[in-house]
Length: 290
Image (cartoon, rainbow, N blue to C red):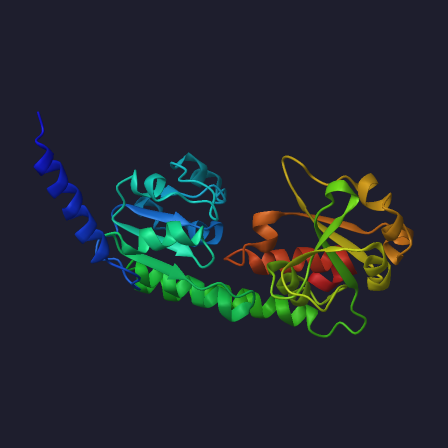
């Protein structure tokens, strides 16, 4: 039988270890069992050829397909410390905004190095992300090579869209539950991609995501609607075009609805230059993306 005093001592020891934990860091001394949290984080690890260092990933990490074979520690914004720590990681690399905050605070105070990667939805943010992930893994040469490659690819894609004179107004629709349009405002990945593709966000005046009134949709005058293609719960074209407010806008006439995979469109990782070209081609025709 385990004596009560031993149990108390064991729990006290754990508490002291946690309170004096690793907190945040920028590098991992042991990269043998890394948990990647955030789809773009996992994608970068694979692009670096360092996937052998991964022991688990979050549920948004679905690219490349091989990542799906790794244990899943939960959704990036609904993590549990128990789930992450159950795979006995030697380090954690997580995208900024992982949550909930209470769970992340526990992970940061555990005796496991925790690297938080800032998220900004622009060219520089992607390169910074690659460098932070690569340096945390100790892959200096591969990190510089991938950074140069992605930097050049992004610059080339941006050059194709920078001189577009008449920019189309794009409405990114996240959901239409109950007939209410939930749209992307400033400070979102959708806004960042719309800008990079040489277009303009049709709505303004708010950050994050917001339900729009019919009047706001009509006032936005979108030329195109952008939605994520999902395996489940995709918004049907008929639902979009049948919305009375949208029917009263240019989209109601030209019926331009662009569908793209969510992680590809909004991931802001190594594939973003390709996503920029694809979105620009859908909005302006293939000549723009060549």
